Length: 242
Image (cartoon, rainbow, N blue to C red; front, side, top):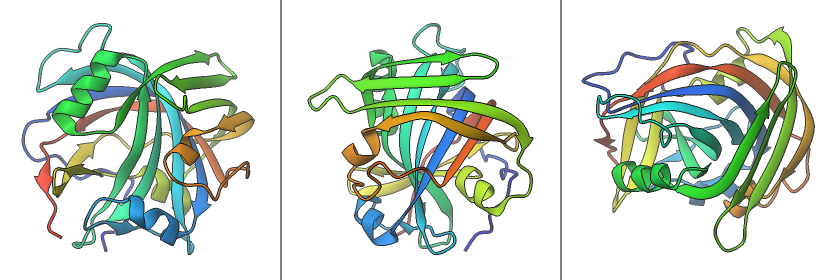
């Protein structure tokens, strides 16, 4: 199995997507690998740390999205996003992220991501409040069921360096996606994450349960981290052997 590395392997070929991810909050819970295995694409199995797999709830600000080498898309390329994600491994031992859902407040961005990249974006009423000592995110899906989340945290100045769990949860350089009957992988590249500890102030979430993970309930998270952000690029998708 590939080792976890805080530095991304360089992309091969021209990037097809470039984005600024800003003011991210990484909220994670332990989950039984057997619970998430049915939610992963074909040929992907749960990645495990300390005997558990993990589910992440990650709100942040998307800025300056640029597709296929073009300039940043004004207005529609910047929005609040909240995603629910899992961690998997393919048959070659490559580790990556699997998104259960991605809430976004721009309908055009939702349609583009679903059509071009087959990502499970959902149109939502999402917004944030970011100050020097507080980050607050909320989202309500504009679809039947109205799955919603509300998160507020206080970032600290306590930097996180060389923490094995933090690297397992954040240093991910592949995205696994189902495309028809195939599973494809998209490589991504960015500078090592600047990470800091953070304290949860408010957490009322229905997105994780809406993704099919019901064991967490109202249990407190097992890990909460903050990052001021990175600029990331994605390469062309490639088929995963299964």
